[in-house]
Length: 542
Ligand code: G1P
Ligand code: ZN
Image 1 (cartoon, protein in one colour):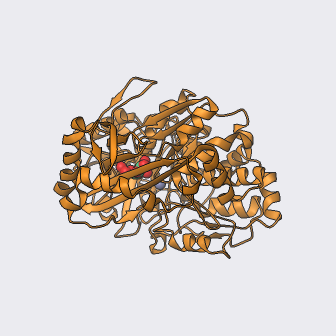
Image 2: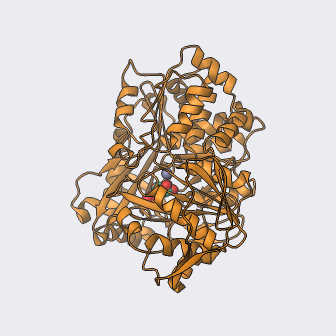
Image 3: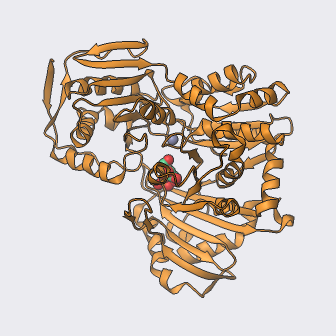
């Protein structure tokens, strides 16, 4: 072994959050920065004799970072690293590879839906052996290790060529370079009825998948075009680029506006979908129909049994607290458990491991199941296609039928981005300070039934997470949630979540923003966002 101990540190970086450590690319490229964080991971979770998975979403600096991490892994005594060819590994595929190989963990190089490039964002995320994001105890240990470290170990040998599939040796460590798509595509073939989807497509069903120049391109081309027979070119922006072609790879009507406009047109394809930088998010569209992510979770949960992988029925549904209650109605109808967790996929991990939830979702375009321990964009696309093939219905018909059965939960999220921190805090503290006085009061014509600062007790391990968002529930079933983003990279981002349920079919065609007008008015009265921030409208509405 020929390695060097480079003296550096203590690590000046900040604590890794839910999604690992996310910073400007320039910060990660600064001398010793990436190295110190990676050494902190190895110090905290142990490296000697371990098997790790490594890959990322193809963004700028990813390949270089992978080389550095391989050399550090070798120097720290890691036994084997399974690396995706070209370093291209979607987050759900990474989760699957960890589980499939019984690896001890994995490192994913991504800043998810945040723009990439020299001036963009970069990120490093550690996943544990169940394939899911590191829980708080592990991220805290990594942070503690980062403050203690005095330097890092790195092999003097060069990293191997990441494009050549096969096994090589790096300073005594096995480097196994694998096809990133193959195992994932096989898993999807086991879960879904590919024959039925193929027949639907052969029968003239058209689709468009926008990979947004990010990691899902190769996966979508292989699965949708090659295996399911969608016309060549159905997958657009299919080649991952280091700067995502200048796109903001976040699948929502704002950032995937080209796809959105096409699907809203009468001449558009039958089905449209997009995924984000690292492939864990999804947006679902039908011709003339936008599927709100909260509705998508409810519809998928209600129909999952139509897919072979879920033919035995689902055990439970879990949603993050700000996600609409539409899925709860499905759980009730199915007679299964409904769980309400704090924001962040890691809170689903215990429920999935314990078999208490099969399908999970977040309003932020995240849906997934117990097949991996991350949300999974292409999985959601394939389950939708499977359900459409099995029912013979189009997206908007299926959505309409769902609402007629369960009622429609009108829902919207308003984001106020890059706010000065004191302004965002002022809105939060106005509402927080009033929570106890609200029950029984009438706000904007609606009576408050309950109000609290959401705290979660994990039903599996009993751990408690407090301060997870302010919520106000009205007697008519309307709901307001206000919380600060934990993933923004500039200033503070306030997220306001608005919800109103209706059982009246006459209302089902209404614009959510119109239906939610009284709820929006109540939110302004309660938190004074416009007053505190001077913003007259949100930056992003989903
Ligand atoms: C956002 C989403 C949240 C998601 C997270 C990681 O976090 O709202 O649902 O789990 O990104 O993708 P936030 O910025 O709201 O803290
Ligand atoms: Zn993502």
